[in-house]
Each structure stands twice: as C-alpha cells, then as structure tokens.
Amino acid sequence: MHIFAIANQKGGVGKTTTAVNLAAALAANGQRTLLVDLDPQGNATMGSGVDKRALPRSVYHMLLATASLADVRAASPSGKYDVLPANRELAGAEVEMVDLERREKRLKEALTQHTDEYDFVLIDCPPSLSMLTLNGLCAADGVIIPMQCEYYALEGLSDLVNTIKKVHANFNPDLKIIGLLRVMFDTRSTLSNQVSAQLEQHFGDKVFKTLVPRNVRLAEAPSFGVPGVLFDKNAKGALAYLAFAIEMIERVKNWKE
Ligand code: ADP
Ligand code: MG
Image 1 (cartoon, rainbow, N blue to C red):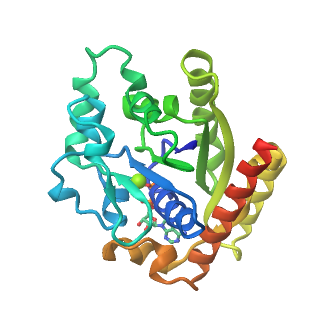
Image 2 (image 1 turned 180 degrees about the vertical axis):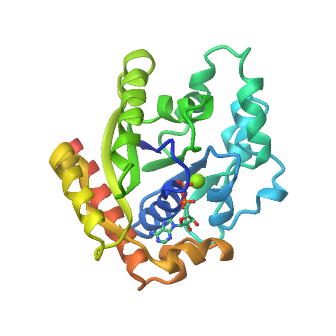
C-alpha cells in the first residue's frame, strides 16, 4: 500500500481535482484505491458523488476514534474507489484533538489496520499547515504537490518544502516529495512556460512528466458528483489525469524492483 498526501498550503491550486481524478484514474486501471478527504470543505467527498450533508459518520469520527475506518468509508458511486468522506464537522477536530495522545498520528494509525486492502491511498489535504495536514503528512510515504505555473508559485513552494522537511525530521522519517504536478497549465502563456522551465531546472525529475492543462470539463465535473476522468473521458484534462495515473503506477513499480 502506497500512501500519498496531495498537499499545497495554497487554496485553489488543484489539490482536490488532482486527488479525485487520480483516484478515479488509478481505479480505472485496476488499482484498489482509497481517497481520504481531510478538508472540512468536503469537496473531494462531493466530487466523488458522496453527499457530505448526509453522512452518518465521517473522517472526523475516525480521527477522534468514535468510529472505525470500516464504519466511515463509502464507495464512490461513480468511480471504483472508496472514500473516507468529510464535511464541516471536521473543522472541529483541530481543537478537539488537542488533548489526545499522539494526535498527529491518528490517520496513520487508522490506516495501518487496512494495509492489505488497498494499492493506493490518496489524502486530499486542506489549504493550510494545520493539525489535519500534519495528520496527512504523518500518514504518507510521499507528497504530491499540484501547482500552477504562475509568478508566485516558486515562493509558496519553499514554505511547503520547509514544512515537509520539518515533518520528516520530527515525525515521519519516511516522508519525501514524490513530485510536483503542473496543473491548470496554459501552453500558450509565455509565463507558464518560463515557470515550468524553472521548475524543471530546480527540481529535475521531481517534476512529473504529465502536464495537466486548464480544461473546463474538469471544472464542470464536480457539480455532477462525477470525477472528470469519467465525466468526459476524451477531454484533454481527463486524458492528462489518466496519463498521470500511469506515471504514478510506473514510479511505484520501479521502487519495488
Ligand atoms: P484546491 O483543492 O487546491 O483548493 P481545486 O482542485 O478545488 O483546488 O481547484 C480549484 C478550482 O479550479 C476548482 O473550481 C476546480 O474545478 C478548478 N480546476 C482545477 N484544476 C483545473 C484544470 N486543470 N482546469 C480547469 N479548472 C480546474
Ligand atoms: Mg481542495
């Protein structure tokens, strides 16, 4: 089982879109996949076709140990993957976890009992460096960082890289950056191409080969509760996330060898 956190402390950079579409694309390739929604906004939950307003139990209960993973998980009705769903309740977890022991390891501990059931676990992190994100980073083997190739992208990246270094040093020695995923990419923009080239220069093979273009079909899909890769299979955005899933499967294969 490979566990990846999809993180970037900035909002609106494509974390949830990447989490939902990578989960659906991995599942379409026969990978047993679990998507963990760690954002109280519950966008990954809704985007997977699970109604966040009608959850008997959510990731919140699992983190506070009042429900087990098996109690909380739901099958995505549209994709062939499982979801640990979230809603606004999760915002309270931050405060309520303060007195718990090993509070940064709650997600990791919940997942350890299910290592044989999944090939991939993807964690959609909230846009902050909070206790929820820390739980995601403590549970993960690696981080996937979606980013837009814009002027301030590199600046924001150094904060995230420093946080990952701190978590690696203090909590999770297994944690590493798997790669940077360029999303909402506009091939016709000179700036995008310049930033993209800079990224390749600084980060080398840490930059994924797949480029996810800006594509309106990916943005439309969530309102139907269907991952973009299934909503319009032939759209450029869908094809990119399918290619990204293959790239991830290949990377993981090379680790085993
Ligand atoms: P985050 O989870 O980082 O806040 P989202 O995945 O929710 O970001 O994306 C922010 C917005 O951008 C959403 O409205 C989403 O539909 C849209 N979006 C994400 N990726 C793309 C893309 N490749 N093309 C077009 N729109 C996108
Ligand atoms: Mg999000």
